[in-house]
Image 1: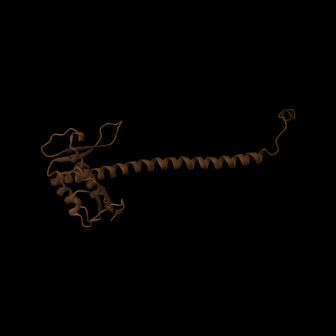
Image 2: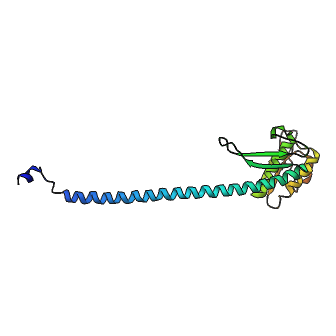
Image 3: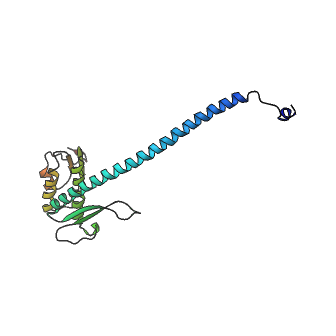
Length: 195
């Protein structure tokens, strides 16, 4: 009796409280296990997604690279061009290598304005060949091209018109003559534009 009295006052609701705390502990343990499983599933999904993205990027880059080389040779009547992933880990990206026929080029900055325009056009057309869009608006892309290059540019555009409709804004007579439909805008004396 002396030892029981030394225990101090006894909580008669201790059994009920223990049951409630036990239920709460079971609930929180289940929630924690669910969260840990979700974290594992999300990490696995992220790894799988990263692998899929890397594979699709690599396949698309190879396809665009192949088509870029074809369009570059078509637009320049020779030469070589390719795309490569950057080797610099601090600045990842895609490097463009282009060598028009008869030239030794170290960078794109060494190309003339017309050669850069043709290189960019070759890349754009390569992307459209691999991943066609319903339409494409080209604004004065042929401005830096000479007569000889205009013909090759128009042939390259024509090769993609089965899947992509091109709206070309231009002042170049050769490109205007190659168009299926022509919309002209002129300005009268009063400063009003008319189609």
